Amino acid sequence: MRNLLFITVFLFCSFQKSESPSDRSIRVENRVKKSERIIYFFFKAHKDSSGNEKITLHETKISDGKLKSTPFFDRNEVRKGDLIITVIEADGKEGARQLVRDPLNRELEVYEKEGISRHRASLQSAEFNIRFSYADNIQWVKVEKATDSGVQLLFTQKL
Image 1: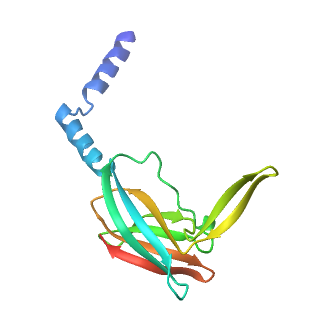
Image 2: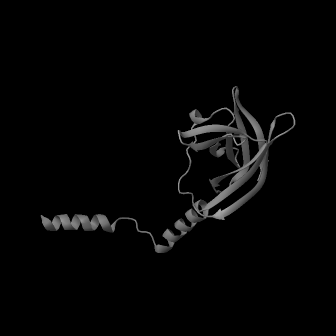
């Protein structure tokens, strides 16, 4: 009986598909090239004379590295004034989205004897940056602002 079990296991293992070492290394190299780069977007935001917000893409950098975690975009967390940054792929589909708290109305924490309090600081201009996992098919970046009536498109640029 023990010999029958041994023969069954032996036959099962011998019919499994084996990969050559070169097959495995090719698969790993492709995965590394795709996922171990980060794209950084550096933006400037300012209010014009009429109080409208303007966003400009100041710089884009791509570097080696891997994001330890991918931020989860939750539409329920969006507040009025927040920015939604979206990268768009070559086929027009949204690649990823991230939320940036209102850069021109920053929330500051103040430590006092009574405890921690929060204050809003209204700014005329500000800089902010955001990062995404890089993919070769990212073609566009889009910035939208959350308003009471939905979202307002502020900026779109082809990369």
